[in-house]
Length: 299
Ligand SMILES: [Zn+2]
Image 1 (tube, protein in one colour):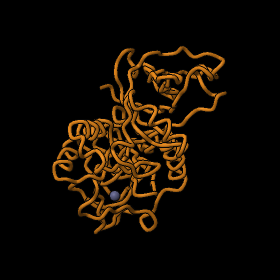
Image 2 (spheres, protein in one colour):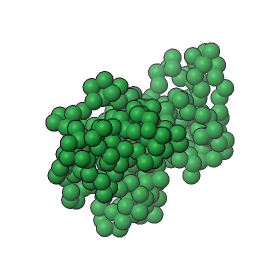
Image 3 (cartoon, rainbow, N blue to C red):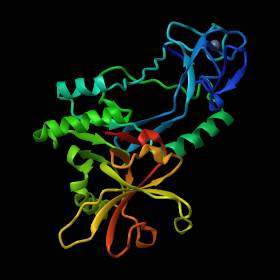
């Protein structure tokens, strides 16, 4: 595979499409290169993020050359010798990495901030499409930490830590906010007060909370008509009950079936008293916003 990111393609119906409006069920394959000198096949690459220590790159969706094809030698998108290699994202890779003793995982699941960033970048890229001299992507081959691109892969890591508790502190997860051990990343209901203490120190942390859905609230004017989910609280001796609460962005509450356990990935905070949906004096809360169904997994 070689080539560059392209923001337009011609679909099966000879319609020129922009990557922003691409819809695989309407713009059927084969997709071909928009350069009139060229008939190379293209494939759609969904938006994603690439994360390394302390730095996150947001890559908007684009088209790239289909494997086995080359651009015509006069095509404006033709390049040679540049590799585009995408990290695998299957659970199989996670299991294999854990079995090999690889214990650093980079979290590449999009959350609310990432989606906002990607939208901004997509608009900018559309206004100013990359030319072949200014915007290529190439990733070196070789050993890299495994990427965690979806909640199923994240669950593999969760399950592995549960099954191998002595290894919990050797497994490291590179998140959007820091690099943490398994124990500082996954929180069940019984561990919510550890999360509260952690959040009081760091203010915001991207973590995974495993909770039982106990209340799906109807939107009310008092909370700006936003919709919220309450998880089962952690009961604390002599202290207020501590609830995980989820504000819904553009997602359906159906992702949170009542009485079921879900894993929620998000940047959690402790809401200020005026933002709390629980009783500000009698109860306590940790909160995140869910903007994408990719942040949720029913267990
Ligand atoms: Zn071409």
